[in-house]
Amino acid sequence: MTDPDAESRTHSQNTPAPLSRGTLMAACLAICVAQIGIPLASPLIGEIQRDLGASAAALAWIPAAFILPTAILELNFGVLGDLFGRKRLLVLGGLFITAGCLVVATAGSMTQLIAGQAVAGLGAAAIFPSSLAVIVTGTREPAARARSLSYWALSLAFGAMIAPLISGFIAEHAHWGWAFVPLAVLGLVTSAVSGRHIVDSRQATADRGLDRPGQITIAVSLLALLYAVIEGAGDGYSEPRIVLAFVLAAASFTAFLVVERRSRAPMLRLDLFRTPAFAAAAAIGLLALFGFIGTAYALSIKLENVHHVSPLRAALPLALIQAVPLLLTPVLPKLLQRVHPRTLLVGGLLSLAAGELWMALLPGDATSLASMTGPILLMGVGFITMFSSLTAVAVGTVDIRYAGMASAVTSLVRETGQALGPAVTGAVALGMASGALADKLDSSGLPPQALGAAQAVNSEGGALAAANADLGSLSRTVAPLAREALESGLDLGMYLCAGAALAGAVIAALALRHTAASDAMALGTSAPEAAPATPTTSTSSSVKPLSSA
Image (cartoon, rainbow, N blue to C red):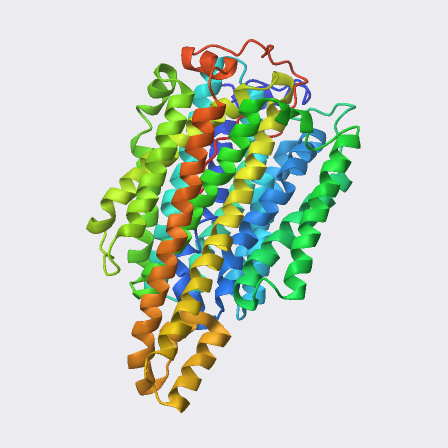
């Protein structure tokens, strides 16, 4: 009996072999493992805050540290895969995830925890484009590619669903650090399976190369922006270093645009944004993921830090939101063939906005799963419908020669939205809560000494610290006021997220009318400008579904 993987390896790496079952299974495992890392820490926020005494700003860095490497490095990891082979990146990606998770699991400080998250995120940044590229390069027939990509997307959704259940269950029975050990083991399994079964591929052409100036300028811009947003929530946005960080972010982004315009091999072709549908898709991806991840972050803080539900109970709503896409898997491909992508995109964004708004309007004590079922269903249906149709629009509106770059750009803005979601939502929600608590304390009638102690806690750690600090008998007065302030602030954060999704729906309705690509997608055909793919077509990140929670 012949080994299809062995036969495939006889092909030239610059002429990709047909996709084998082993390669497909290894790629799906890799993307599942990488996706687990994104929401894994969400149900642990309360446990980490109590164990390490983390500030509100530090908590916002936990998800951001994992997502940032992907947002910053994914475009160039796609190029590295083209130049040196995707198999190497998949093996190394699994090893980085293992190393990072072990650092997090043994963390005794927030600095070590955030550093470990960044290392693990580096592994995910290598896996995301590489796992997809080996599938795209190995499938030439549209039906085979669609079927393989559906397995890839299903694996991604499955990883997003089980991640909070893993961390929530383990944290309920052991120290929260143990929640990262299964992912460390899975990282090793991913490396081993990729090394054994992945058929390597690459597209090393003369016009492909690392865009170091572009990489440096976009990295500085994103880091400075996140620093300003997160740290400014606690220190005040008028602080000189916060203002300087915003200025640095703007200057670096301007430099990035200049560098990319002049580069012979840019990581981002700016003329892609001359296509209105593509520019609109990028903006929609940013807004939608900002709102989706921001709402999940606010919900996890509300359940754990305000109402002190168990980690597993806090994980269930997050897992169910991601379970909805799995339930829709049998009907979604038919829906995408029969309904215009613009219609699906607007409908998905409106459903997402409605779910986020409903979640914000729930009473403060509505922490049961039954009370959140309605918002969960709306958010889950809205999210999977939105990102599926958005992928078709984003990649289908550009020349096939730039499909990989177009998808990578869409991924970059998506992950930027994921990083900004918790940062901005946390800054708005917790900043407002601290201000509201200060006003409540001033009118509480507490004796001067007790008032001073409560104000000191609020000033140092915000309403989050005041709600969970052990102040003795004073806690009976301060904690309810802090929880009330936090609920109002977190609700405001969710309103902001719903507004972002609603803005995306407006953009989709106005900017995606009569696009040739979306019309073609609705009919199940190719866009007029899309030429047949050739072996030299770059697929560093082709057709990446916009999922992650």
